[in-house]
Amino acid sequence: MSSLIAAAASLLVFCAPGYPGTSGDAQPLVEDFATTLGAAAGWPAASLTAVYDADEKSDLMRLAAPEAGLAFVPYPFFVEHGAELHLLPLAQADVPPAGVQQRWTLVLKSGHGPLPGALSGLTLISTAGYAQSFVRQVLHDIGPLPATLSITATGQVLSALRRAANGDPVAVLLDQEQSAALSSLPFAASLHSAATSKPVPVALIAVVGNRLPNARARQLQQALLHLSGSASGKAALGRLRLNGFVLPQLPGTPGS
Image (cartoon, rainbow, N blue to C red; front, top):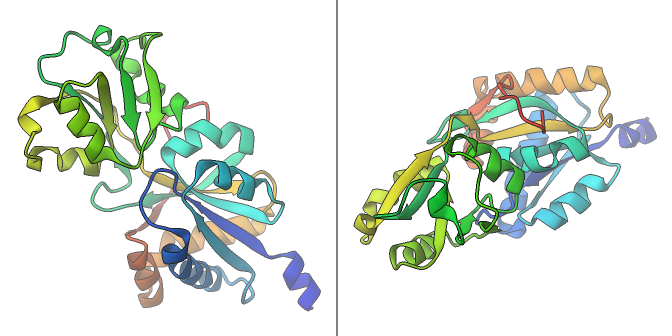
Protein backbone atom coordinates (compact mmCIF):
# COMPACT_ATOMS: atom_id res chain seq x y z
CA MET A 1 0.00 0.00 0.00
CA SER A 2 2.77 2.47 0.88
CA SER A 3 4.39 1.96 -2.52
CA LEU A 4 1.10 2.68 -4.26
CA ILE A 5 0.66 5.90 -2.29
CA ALA A 6 4.22 6.95 -3.03
CA ALA A 7 3.70 6.31 -6.74
CA ALA A 8 0.64 8.56 -6.67
CA ALA A 9 2.40 11.42 -4.87
CA SER A 10 2.36 14.78 -6.66
CA LEU A 11 4.40 17.95 -6.16
CA LEU A 12 2.77 21.38 -6.46
CA VAL A 13 5.35 23.97 -7.52
CA PHE A 14 4.56 27.54 -6.50
CA CYS A 15 6.30 29.66 -9.15
CA ALA A 16 6.79 33.30 -8.13
CA PRO A 17 9.54 34.91 -10.24
CA GLY A 18 10.04 38.58 -9.48
CA TYR A 19 8.03 38.58 -6.28
CA PRO A 20 9.35 39.18 -2.76
CA GLY A 21 9.86 36.49 -0.18
CA THR A 22 12.24 33.58 0.08
CA SER A 23 11.71 29.87 -0.21
CA GLY A 24 12.54 29.50 3.46
CA ASP A 25 9.86 31.97 4.53
CA ALA A 26 7.17 30.60 2.23
CA GLN A 27 7.87 26.88 2.44
CA PRO A 28 5.91 26.16 5.65
CA LEU A 29 2.92 28.05 4.22
CA VAL A 30 2.81 26.16 0.92
CA GLU A 31 3.33 22.85 2.72
CA ASP A 32 0.35 23.62 4.95
CA PHE A 33 -1.70 24.56 1.88
CA ALA A 34 -0.80 21.28 0.14
CA THR A 35 -1.74 19.22 3.20
CA THR A 36 -5.08 21.00 3.55
CA LEU A 37 -5.86 20.79 -0.17
CA GLY A 38 -4.93 17.12 -0.40
CA ALA A 39 -7.20 16.30 2.53
CA ALA A 40 -10.06 18.31 0.99
CA ALA A 41 -9.63 16.34 -2.26
CA GLY A 42 -9.76 13.04 -0.38
CA TRP A 43 -6.20 12.13 -1.30
CA PRO A 44 -4.11 9.92 1.01
CA ALA A 45 -2.02 11.76 3.58
CA ALA A 46 1.31 13.10 2.21
CA SER A 47 0.30 12.41 -1.40
CA LEU A 48 0.36 16.14 -2.23
CA THR A 49 3.45 18.17 -1.34
CA ALA A 50 4.49 21.68 -2.33
CA VAL A 51 7.57 23.81 -2.87
CA TYR A 52 7.95 27.58 -3.30
CA ASP A 53 10.47 29.04 -5.74
CA ALA A 54 10.86 32.69 -6.76
CA ASP A 55 13.33 32.20 -9.62
CA GLU A 56 12.17 31.58 -13.19
CA LYS A 57 15.03 29.28 -14.21
CA SER A 58 14.74 27.27 -11.02
CA ASP A 59 10.96 27.05 -11.49
CA LEU A 60 11.44 25.55 -14.94
CA MET A 61 13.95 23.04 -13.60
CA ARG A 62 11.55 21.97 -10.85
CA LEU A 63 8.67 21.63 -13.31
CA ALA A 64 10.81 19.43 -15.55
CA ALA A 65 10.99 16.81 -12.80
CA PRO A 66 8.47 13.97 -13.29
CA GLU A 67 7.04 14.32 -9.77
CA ALA A 68 5.97 17.92 -10.49
CA GLY A 69 2.36 17.30 -11.41
CA LEU A 70 0.94 20.71 -10.58
CA ALA A 71 1.99 24.36 -10.80
CA PHE A 72 0.72 27.53 -9.17
CA VAL A 73 1.76 30.23 -11.62
CA PRO A 74 1.27 33.96 -12.14
CA TYR A 75 -0.51 34.59 -15.42
CA PRO A 76 2.62 36.07 -17.07
CA PHE A 77 4.45 32.80 -16.38
CA PHE A 78 1.53 30.87 -17.87
CA VAL A 79 1.59 32.92 -21.08
CA GLU A 80 5.37 32.59 -21.40
CA HIS A 81 5.74 28.90 -20.58
CA GLY A 82 2.26 27.36 -20.68
CA ALA A 83 2.58 25.85 -24.14
CA GLU A 84 6.04 24.33 -23.68
CA LEU A 85 5.10 22.87 -20.29
CA HIS A 86 1.66 21.73 -21.48
CA LEU A 87 -0.05 23.47 -18.56
CA LEU A 88 -3.75 22.69 -18.28
CA PRO A 89 -5.52 25.17 -15.94
CA LEU A 90 -7.61 23.67 -13.16
CA ALA A 91 -8.59 26.81 -11.27
CA GLN A 92 -8.04 30.55 -11.23
CA ALA A 93 -6.89 32.20 -8.02
CA ASP A 94 -8.77 35.00 -6.27
CA VAL A 95 -5.90 37.17 -5.04
CA PRO A 96 -6.73 40.28 -2.99
CA PRO A 97 -6.88 43.15 -3.60
CA ALA A 98 -7.20 42.55 -7.36
CA GLY A 99 -9.52 39.53 -7.28
CA VAL A 100 -9.57 36.91 -10.02
CA GLN A 101 -8.49 39.36 -12.75
CA GLN A 102 -6.34 42.45 -12.93
CA ARG A 103 -5.24 45.14 -15.34
CA TRP A 104 -1.61 46.03 -16.00
CA THR A 105 -0.59 49.68 -16.39
CA LEU A 106 2.21 51.18 -18.47
CA VAL A 107 3.87 54.11 -16.70
CA LEU A 108 6.11 56.71 -18.34
CA LYS A 109 7.55 60.05 -17.36
CA SER A 110 4.99 62.82 -17.68
CA GLY A 111 5.06 64.66 -20.98
CA HIS A 112 5.92 61.67 -23.14
CA GLY A 113 4.97 61.59 -26.80
CA PRO A 114 2.31 59.38 -28.42
CA LEU A 115 2.41 55.62 -28.06
CA PRO A 116 3.88 53.32 -29.15
CA GLY A 117 6.56 55.63 -30.56
CA ALA A 118 7.35 57.05 -27.11
CA LEU A 119 8.77 53.65 -26.18
CA SER A 120 11.51 53.77 -28.83
CA GLY A 121 14.92 53.24 -27.29
CA LEU A 122 13.53 52.68 -23.79
CA THR A 123 13.92 49.78 -21.39
CA LEU A 124 10.58 48.48 -20.13
CA ILE A 125 10.94 47.22 -16.55
CA SER A 126 8.42 45.01 -14.76
CA THR A 127 8.07 42.15 -12.29
CA ALA A 128 6.68 40.36 -15.36
CA GLY A 129 9.64 41.34 -17.53
CA TYR A 130 10.84 37.72 -17.67
CA ALA A 131 7.67 36.93 -19.65
CA GLN A 132 8.22 38.95 -22.81
CA SER A 133 5.35 37.27 -24.65
CA PHE A 134 3.01 38.38 -21.88
CA VAL A 135 4.31 41.95 -21.92
CA ARG A 136 3.77 42.21 -25.66
CA GLN A 137 0.32 40.64 -25.29
CA VAL A 138 -0.98 43.08 -22.65
CA LEU A 139 0.41 46.06 -24.59
CA HIS A 140 -0.97 44.82 -27.90
CA ASP A 141 -3.70 47.46 -28.09
CA ILE A 142 -1.28 50.42 -28.15
CA GLY A 143 0.16 49.18 -31.46
CA PRO A 144 3.34 47.38 -32.55
CA LEU A 145 6.10 47.87 -29.98
CA PRO A 146 9.27 49.50 -31.36
CA ALA A 147 12.09 47.12 -32.23
CA THR A 148 14.39 49.29 -30.11
CA LEU A 149 12.38 48.66 -26.93
CA SER A 150 14.05 46.22 -24.54
CA ILE A 151 12.18 44.35 -21.81
CA THR A 152 13.74 43.37 -18.50
CA ALA A 153 12.63 41.86 -15.19
CA THR A 154 13.02 43.42 -11.77
CA GLY A 155 11.92 42.89 -8.21
CA GLN A 156 12.68 46.56 -7.47
CA VAL A 157 9.66 48.33 -8.92
CA LEU A 158 10.00 51.42 -6.74
CA SER A 159 13.55 51.98 -7.97
CA ALA A 160 12.38 51.61 -11.58
CA LEU A 161 9.62 54.18 -11.06
CA ARG A 162 12.06 56.62 -9.50
CA ARG A 163 14.34 56.21 -12.52
CA ALA A 164 11.43 56.96 -14.86
CA ALA A 165 10.46 60.04 -12.84
CA ASN A 166 14.07 61.27 -13.00
CA GLY A 167 14.03 61.11 -16.78
CA ASP A 168 16.03 57.91 -17.32
CA PRO A 169 15.08 56.13 -20.56
CA VAL A 170 12.80 53.58 -18.88
CA ALA A 171 9.13 52.68 -18.80
CA VAL A 172 7.51 50.55 -16.09
CA LEU A 173 4.71 48.00 -16.40
CA LEU A 174 2.80 47.64 -13.12
CA ASP A 175 0.34 45.06 -11.88
CA GLN A 176 -2.90 46.32 -10.37
CA GLU A 177 -1.70 46.45 -6.77
CA GLN A 178 1.46 48.30 -7.76
CA SER A 179 -0.52 50.72 -9.90
CA ALA A 180 -2.93 51.47 -7.05
CA ALA A 181 0.01 52.63 -4.93
CA LEU A 182 1.40 54.91 -7.61
CA SER A 183 -0.38 58.08 -6.44
CA SER A 184 1.13 57.77 -2.96
CA LEU A 185 4.70 58.20 -4.21
CA PRO A 186 6.35 61.57 -3.54
CA PHE A 187 7.39 61.80 -7.19
CA ALA A 188 4.02 60.65 -8.61
CA ALA A 189 3.45 64.00 -10.36
CA SER A 190 6.43 63.26 -12.60
CA LEU A 191 4.83 60.02 -13.84
CA HIS A 192 1.92 59.30 -16.16
CA SER A 193 -0.18 56.16 -16.59
CA ALA A 194 0.03 55.92 -20.36
CA ALA A 195 -1.97 52.76 -21.06
CA THR A 196 -3.95 50.10 -19.21
CA SER A 197 -4.47 46.52 -20.36
CA LYS A 198 -7.66 44.56 -20.62
CA PRO A 199 -8.36 42.36 -17.57
CA VAL A 200 -6.31 39.16 -17.39
CA PRO A 201 -6.08 36.45 -14.72
CA VAL A 202 -3.84 37.03 -11.72
CA ALA A 203 -2.70 33.43 -11.17
CA LEU A 204 -3.65 29.84 -11.95
CA ILE A 205 -3.21 26.32 -10.66
CA ALA A 206 -2.54 24.00 -13.59
CA VAL A 207 -1.75 20.36 -14.26
CA VAL A 208 1.68 19.84 -15.82
CA GLY A 209 1.33 17.74 -18.97
CA ASN A 210 -0.36 14.41 -18.38
CA ARG A 211 1.19 13.82 -14.97
CA LEU A 212 -2.10 13.76 -13.08
CA PRO A 213 -4.84 11.25 -13.96
CA ASN A 214 -8.12 12.86 -14.94
CA ALA A 215 -10.01 11.51 -11.93
CA ARG A 216 -7.46 12.93 -9.49
CA ALA A 217 -7.42 16.24 -11.37
CA ARG A 218 -11.20 16.50 -11.04
CA GLN A 219 -10.98 15.74 -7.31
CA LEU A 220 -8.41 18.46 -6.87
CA GLN A 221 -10.36 20.97 -8.95
CA GLN A 222 -13.49 20.49 -6.86
CA ALA A 223 -11.44 20.80 -3.68
CA LEU A 224 -9.93 24.07 -4.91
CA LEU A 225 -13.32 25.53 -5.82
CA HIS A 226 -14.74 24.74 -2.37
CA LEU A 227 -11.64 25.22 -0.22
CA SER A 228 -12.76 28.58 1.19
CA GLY A 229 -15.92 26.94 2.54
CA SER A 230 -14.17 25.20 5.42
CA ALA A 231 -12.41 26.76 8.38
CA SER A 232 -9.16 24.88 7.72
CA GLY A 233 -9.27 25.71 4.02
CA LYS A 234 -9.98 29.38 4.64
CA ALA A 235 -7.08 29.54 7.10
CA ALA A 236 -4.67 27.88 4.66
CA LEU A 237 -5.76 30.26 1.91
CA GLY A 238 -5.41 33.29 4.16
CA ARG A 239 -1.82 32.43 5.04
CA LEU A 240 -1.02 32.64 1.31
CA ARG A 241 -3.04 35.85 0.84
CA LEU A 242 -5.67 34.07 -1.23
CA ASN A 243 -9.46 34.33 -1.04
CA GLY A 244 -10.11 31.12 -2.97
CA PHE A 245 -10.42 29.78 -6.50
CA VAL A 246 -12.88 29.88 -9.41
CA LEU A 247 -13.07 28.02 -12.70
CA PRO A 248 -10.51 29.30 -15.24
CA GLN A 249 -11.60 32.30 -17.33
CA LEU A 250 -8.82 32.71 -19.85
CA PRO A 251 -8.46 35.16 -22.72
CA GLY A 252 -7.36 33.64 -26.01
CA THR A 253 -3.59 33.42 -25.51
CA PRO A 254 -0.84 31.18 -26.86
CA GLY A 255 -0.42 29.65 -23.40
CA SER A 256 -4.05 28.51 -23.12
